[in-house]
View 1 (cartoon, helix red, strand yellow):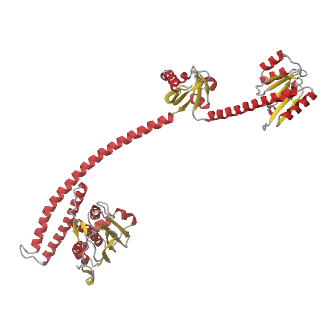
View 2 (view 1 turned 60 degrees about the vertical axis):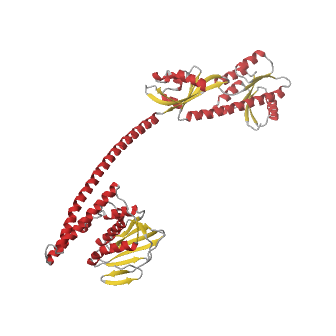
View 3 (view 1 turned 45 degrees about the vertical axis):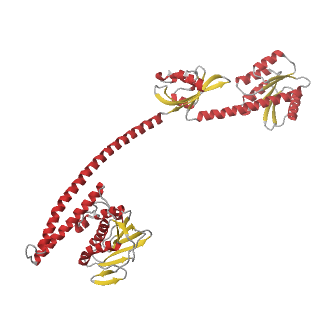
Length: 538
């Protein structure tokens, strides 16, 4: 054997002790032998807790003062797990029976072949001791696992009485192990749950395992704790010898589930309220849009009449008017057209909100649209004495768009740049880029702060109250431009620096199977005309 074993040899005859030690060491490797010569010396040695870790005792029955049975009684009283081999020079059946009853491993007579028989018996005893120690360590290992478990672990006999509980069951119920061992398991359940135990036992006998059974345990202080238990049958061959199971406190889980149900109910109720409010908002929005549309139509009709009569008066159809009267009528007409533009913006916005806005597409020249826009804004550019720079590529392909909507887009963007530019220049450009035409409008106006750039396309938005009071407007122009561009599967964005100016970009897909011949454009710089080859004229 490669294992180390300690043997206590108790022999009052020194010569016999030495011969026995020699025989054992010759036949068994790796053993350590201590010797004592009297019963009292032996009892004192095994009583010493620091020196009683022996694996085997070889005990001579005949000792001075006390016999070997007295030593066996001491071992039994101290509950030591120590196998003992009794040896004696005189065979006595009565003594052998007494020794075996007191727990001796074996009884050997000192016959002529004694020293040959003894090592064999010692090997057998040590092997069994080794297996016993191994089993004890294994049992202790699993016992520690059971004790460290966060769930209650228990076992029952076939009548349903508790035979084992771990520490968690004690904590869960408030009872000690001594109070729990021997009690019927059903007595731990609340009264209305006890009737279920018989049904569970029947099911376990049939299925051998039941899982996730929810019940309530009654604690020592009268509290009821919800638990989830598993129950399994313990078989001894084909016969059920008992049951074992696990009990888990589910108080927190049930509390979480109740809170989750409450939160879900609150969310469901809030969603219903939101749905109801959204429906109401949609209804109010439809009423608002209808109202705006009706009012705008009602305003536009008389306003067109006012503008028509004002223009007739200005042109002298109803009689001669002097220069001052012409100026006054011109102001009336300008204000009327401004008001008409605002009404049209509100009408367009209302149509977009209601989903009534439709595109009337046709194949158009980029140059025709830009020429129309420039013709419209040219008087304002001249009035503010701004430089106009045109950077439009030659031979740009045609685009399939609603020309009125795209005209409105560029009119709103360029008009916005002119409005917020007191001096400097406005640059309008267009170029082919991948599968799109990229337009840009650059100005040297007041620009925007970084935090305002992403807000500029919002509805009814004026970034600064003082600016809106100075420059006017509904705050819908750029929002409408964004809607119109996106309806054409295009994109619109802006880059800007505060007090340095802004650049607006618009990209629109073009028709790949057609091109438009270039023409001439005139670059206007404060009254000086410069012809740029390849552009149309203004």
